[in-house]
Length: 121
Image (cartoon, rainbow, N blue to C red; front, side, top):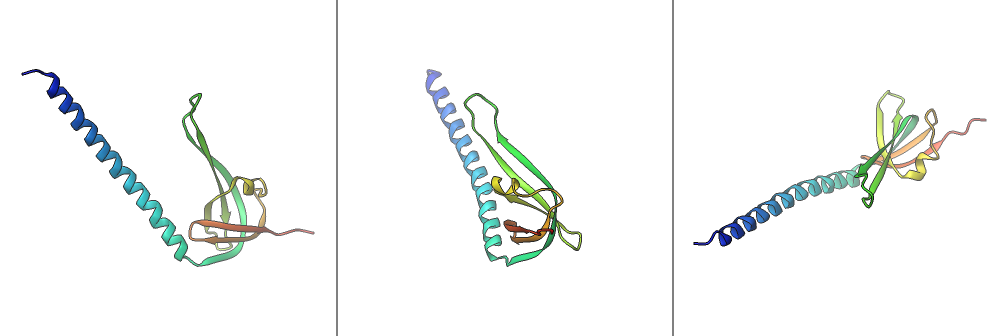
């Protein structure tokens, strides 16, 4: 009996196993995102006076020559009762908000909906 067919079957089974594991992991990660989206859609649109505490960015991806990266932007708000919310925002929003700004925060679940700065005169 030749060893060639045995190796081919072993490699095939390993590839199938890896594909099943990757599919399960991606399915679980995707269902978590869909669940959070459903919760956000059902949540009420809230607003409250708030103060900007901090801003941060998170860069994901590899730094290889041809690799792509993505940047996520976050702003931390403090509500009058001391509760802090860190919400993901679009990049252009971070350029318009500065730590220390006060105004009205609008959010729905974990979604940032807007921030209207208080204009001091």
